[in-house]
Amino acid sequence: MSTRSSKWTFRVVHAWIGLTAVGALLLAACSDGGGSGRQSGSPPSVPPPVVTPPVPAKPDIVLGVIAFEVGGSRVVLRTGLDVQVGESTTITANGRAAGFDELRPGRVVLIRYEPGTSAPKRIDAYDLLVGPLDSVDPATARLVVMGQRVVVTGHTAVGESSVQDGALAALQPGSPVAVSGHVTATGEVLATRIDAAADDGVLLRGLVRSADAATSRLTIGDVDVDYGQATWDSGAFPGGVPVVGDEVIVRARADSAGSVLAPDSMEYVPRWFGATAGTRVELNGVITRRASVQEFEVAGRAVQLDCYIYACDDVAEHLLKNAEARFSGRMTDSGTLLGDLVAEDYRSRSVSLTGPVSAIDPVTGALTLLGFRIQPSGLTNWIDNGAAPSMSASDLRVGDRVDASGTYGGITGLLLASSVRRVSEGGPGIRGWQFIRNEPAIVMLGRPILTDATTTVDVCGAPSDATRLFSMSVYDIEELRIGLSTVVPEPLRATRVTINNGNCW
Image (cartoon, rainbow, N blue to C red; front, side, top):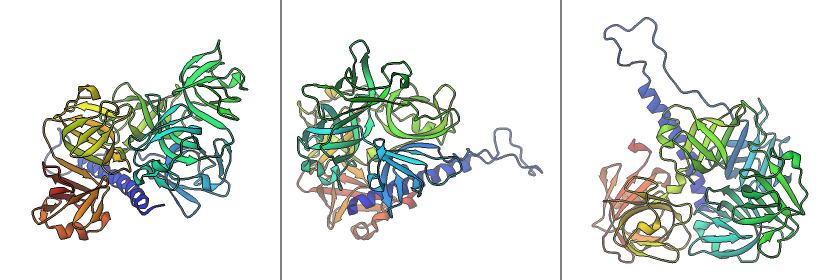
């Protein structure tokens, strides 16, 4: 693992612990037993009960993404969950026997616990696509695998590296790859990991988007499937045949000729991994439908929120379709996850740029902002002055001021946008926690931003100087906010640098 990856994984756990602590402090501050009817004078002999949220029990089933592994026997998920693999833990990859080395950073895993045990009974690491890479364009971060569109972020692991390290340029069209990740609401695959694969067959896993039992045809994402010659168990499917919304796995010995995949076998994936009513589930995935601030579908599975304000409402109201988030709760008799905790995957907004749009690429939809290239995708949320969804890429014009958030694409100046918000004021500037210090410059998104005698520096709002910026430990800097000159020289020049850390609360 690279040094940059190590710093990122520390921050994932650190940030999650910090958010949990903040929630506890906020709740304690608001739960002193008082209220509008509180009386003055001597305290009552029996103090009123303090209202505190329930402590979530350890989940029985977890769907998550590996952040890093520790010592060859533990993995830590992006949500911060520490998983100790025991001697009796069965490990599989795509349902077949595997070893611990298949539990790689970025890979999606399904984890099952038995009640009262600390080590999981089973861990299944799985991919959504295994097959030939049709095309890859590092400049736009667009890939096609087996005819399926694949979207990446800067945090997508590629072999031993990542997209933010420029790893997409090493992928060769025609070579077999394995793509782990999430199915999105728009029919794309959000890749969390891409690996080289053996050239011994293809695999496709995902939600059925359309189905015609009469012709034995269905679609998964962008891929047409003819399962007429495949072996499959009709009794495993609740409807007797594949229907829209079912999750299936199809396998073939080789990539089919033409535009239709003809698998040798097809399997049904139970919607809740076989969970029954009362089972505690932790689900980390992409929101595929948002009906309201309480009702969602995550990876095609129904979630109903019923929880304390600090555990849900403050986060849920900002969650949009295609956002990556974590939901925890218990299964109901109706097959819905009754959620008592939700947390947004904050990494999707790790870098933000604010300023006027100077150019728009009519082919790729990329925006030029302060000399940076802002590349949107089908997963980008478009927001107009705080209202969403009320805008699309076609509504933007040169000169509009926007705030674009996303991750570094591994090519100098490239931001892979998770959201683009048109704003009436703000900037020009850049903010984020991923940066490199190369005195007297700060490197963000691969571009140096020069500091000099005219650059003002503050820490948590208190005036400081540039030496503090270049001498502080990286773990003491949670976020940098850099004001930029309205002129776009090379390198860019910082007019102001604000350092925020855990002491700013």
